[in-house]
Image: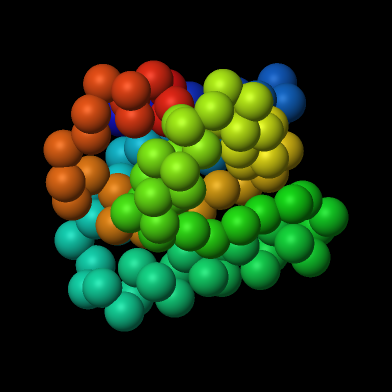
Length: 111
């Protein structure tokens, strides 16, 4: 998408984070094509690096998160508590994302 000169100029203007995000977006299709073990190693490495830099991070499987959500849906206060708990993480690594269709209530929780 971006040529090397454009990337260089954006970095000079202190838009390095934007350049990195655009680069990752370009490479996203390649990342999804990685074998399962490589994706898990990559997710673990990103999580460890975030922790080392002082960011709160957590790994969770989406089915496990949805189970917690369904238990918390029984009371409004539990749902709010769960949302507050997971919104406190700077990095949330979601595994098994979109393997199953999400209900509308679950979609509202994620988005």
